[in-house]
Length: 383
Image (cartoon, rainbow, N blue to C red; front, side, top):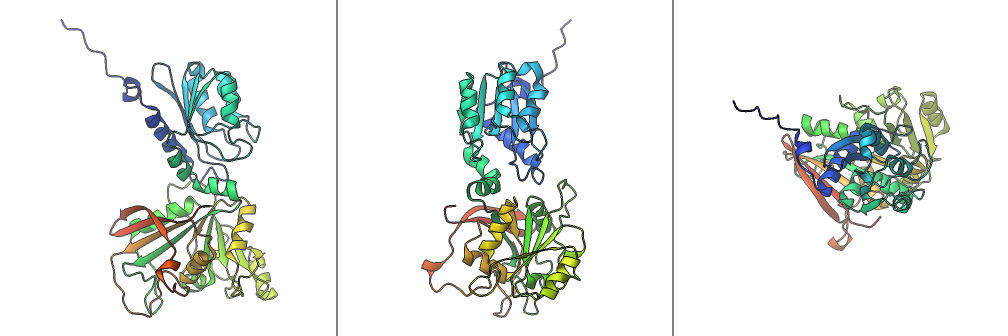
């Protein structure tokens, strides 16, 4: 009689994965905190025993919630002694809303820590790594650092500069038109692309539109994604002169609304916005009398808004690029041609006089959503 073979163990128990593969897993875990973690970074962690078995995983879900490392350590328990801890961001070494993770790692008896990126927060910034090394723990830093920084690009920029990471989103036909000559623009793209936009909204701290978009479309600017678990995203309307009334969807109370304006707007209009429950922020004007987007972004950054999604029309898009506040551009192209010279294009500012004056972009990704194309590019400059 033959002995029955033992059942195969789970895949993660049969193979010892590389440091890079385990860090990739921490990045996957970190993404579970999208829309929840801000203003904290998204962080994932896992613990691998000396025998190569994953014994604990965790991710961070926001201020006041346990950090990813603490959750993974709690799951591992006593088995964490002598194990390797992998994390997508440097463990903290200071008291905030929660105790320092570095001390918890030391207490648990972890022998090795592998991290993707250093935390730029001045309260951390290498201090977590130094504390671990002082305790005799081997530290490996920089595994998939670029991927980790891209994951938390809004956190990294805001921490380093105090202003938010700004993404300009547009939907256009294949010949670059955002609306027809009659100014109709609703649903240029298909359902898959629109669903992705709602995921982008959920990953943002604020959604910004101009007065023209509010008047033309009466948008709600809410996150309509069934999987979204975060709080309502701040809605920001940019209206320098008081063109929009408080009768539209932005003032329906379904999400917080802020109107960015200037002293040019009549006091009666500002009072109307306030009476409708919106916050009114009087900003500095730019050279043309519009709201200075540089000033607006500084003010949003001061209130811990780390990521901004610009969903305005051509005028706001052109101003944002001209003022240099845009970090990333995402354009959904629908497989249609409108043609003609009267339909508005993606940018409403005056065109550049020559190729030397163009705004250079670095293409990061091209993807297909249904029949539409999504082009993602970074503005080519150092932050």
